[in-house]
Amino acid sequence: MNLRLTINGTPVDATLNDSAAARDFAAQLPLTLTLTDFHRTEKIADLPRRLSTSDAPEGAAPRAGDLAFYAPWGNLAVFYRDAPYATGLVILGRMAGGGTERLATADEVRVTIESAS
Image 1 (tube, rainbow, N blue to C red):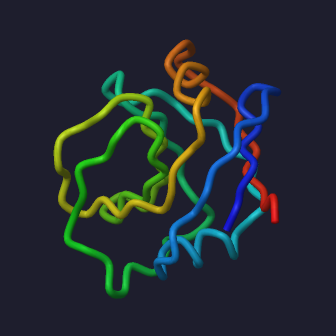
Image 2: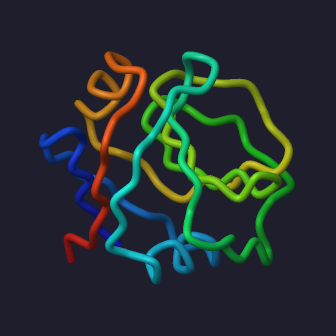
């Protein structure tokens, strides 16, 4: 599924993978969230409800541009830098180029996420 993230007014394209968690995330769209910085690696925000993690791997090593769900906390994580493997992290999809720079430049960003299909 193709997405459009509008980060502080600037559109960025993204694509979700075909996992149960990504489909569950897509069912919550559109969303407008305030993302806050976490460890100078990612921006995070609570989701309205937890996502299904059936058949999800135990964890993942995210790369810059990844959209992910951190199951232990129930939040969305949008990575602007690569990070080490984390148990409970489920990759949902990826942003196209350009989004990571916008995320790295502010402590807090407003993002609207909607289907672009």
